[in-house]
Amino acid sequence: MIEFPSYLTGSQSVLGFTPNQPLPLPLPSDGEFEIGTLRYFNDYLLSDPPWANAVDLTTDLILTDPAGSSAVSFTFSFTITETRDSDPCPFPLTPDEECPDRIGFPVDMPFAEFDINGRTYRLDVVGFKEIPTDLLIDEFISANDETKSAKLYGEISILAECTTDDDCEDGLFCTVDTCDPAGNCEVLSACPAFIDGCVHRGASCHEENGCVDFADDSLCEDGQTCDIITGVCLEVTPCGTAQSTAQEAVGPFSQYKNHGEMVKTAAQSINEYLYEGIISEECHGCIVSQFARGIPSEDQESCGPIADGSP
Image 1 (cartoon, one colour):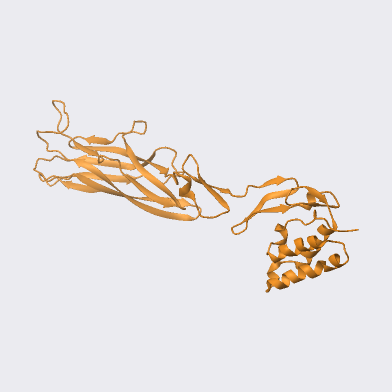
Image 2 (cartoon, rainbow, N blue to C red):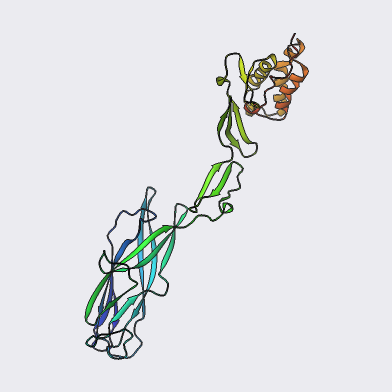
């Protein structure tokens, strides 16, 4: 409650505010909502200035979400035009009317911004209504020796997160960051997933190695293996069998403290195939070289289609 001295009788003009009762309100709000009620009693004023010309209203908006409750404090300024109860009056009057007081806003309607869960919202004060069915107005007038009340209304909107794709860029290879027409950042995969024959393209993404495909032998018939390059099911060749043998022998890369030990394990596991002429040196080199380059077993190219030199 704020009181303004009349400088005449010791009585005072009074401005009061009653906040609205808590209500469920989505963010952003679905249109305007009632913030509270302003009441102004206009006492007679006959003295010379200075008179009250503005007042600040501080409100606490209590926000509740699954993570808990928090209070956000806002301060809005209202203009007060207190008038002398004699000529000249700044407002048009009827012949028998005394000069009233005016409660309104500065030139621009007040607003405040706040953040919730990483998004910025904006609370705008949009005006007054004397009754809920009225149109919004930006002032209300209180006659002398009268208490006038008006509902104060606001709206909550979510501010645009972006205007261009660059505003959403997170610097990661595995994401494609775009700004949608509503101003929200949309994160898409840099490796769209789809089935290409027997291969799952874009099965995963590594920041260092890029898009990773997965050859799914279960999509092939018995006796066939999936070629990760072409997505075609191929008949299992001795070279393909040797490659599977090497991959099983090596196992998880993490168990090797020395990279050379892993390469040695791969080579030794298929040397017998080479010595007995079951696979060619080209096939042997294809298999071992991929381990030497540190390519994980699941990402290795198939060596199966290479001529295997079998009798």
